[in-house]
View 1 (tube, helix red, strand yellow):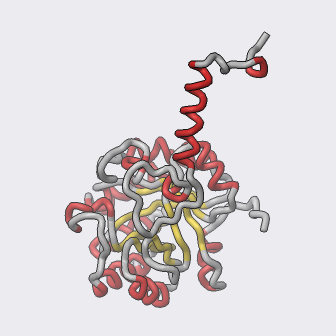
View 2: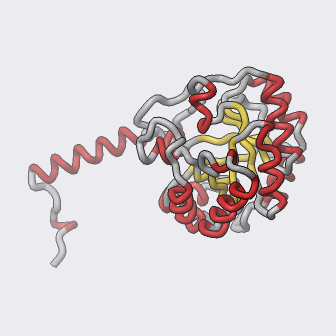
Length: 266
């Protein structure tokens, strides 16, 4: 099926849930990957604060700054002409009060050209989500394993508190979130939450019964350099291809096989 050239909208996502059409979301952090993800017909492009780990080599997402999210978000928003572009609100803006959170989200929306913001949080951030939505800024919630709270949660591990997970997801939806990411929670819990919410759920490590799925691009194409979670399926071996190309080019230069006649100007 050839992807439509029309920009994906929030009503499109709501319609997908109603019609049981699975949604797709993939991260991107720069122009080439943003273009490729968009051209593949992916519904949503996420500019995640995971950029701190995937691109900058940090040990968590916490070091990502608002300025960095604006920088990467603006690049990807220019690259993606069809997909809904969502940018992460970095730590700790959702914990600094409604006004501060709105100001940060407004900068992301205005300075990147994205269409929505993703916000990690528990039921305790419902008032923040409600305030941001009231300001006219679409919000995607994120519950379960929240990477910004990795130290509080005791590491990157499955979250099993069913009552808390359910309460967090419901609070986000009731506060006006147009969708909720469910990360690293038991399949049965994710399925129950998905059935209970009127808005779409996007799963990552949450089983197949969510309304959609999201993966980090580098994991999806086999370009991850560190530990790859169990819930990832690599659809390519890009890391090996790049490493092989570099070795072959280096050897060709050493043996004076590059540049050859085809690559020589004049």
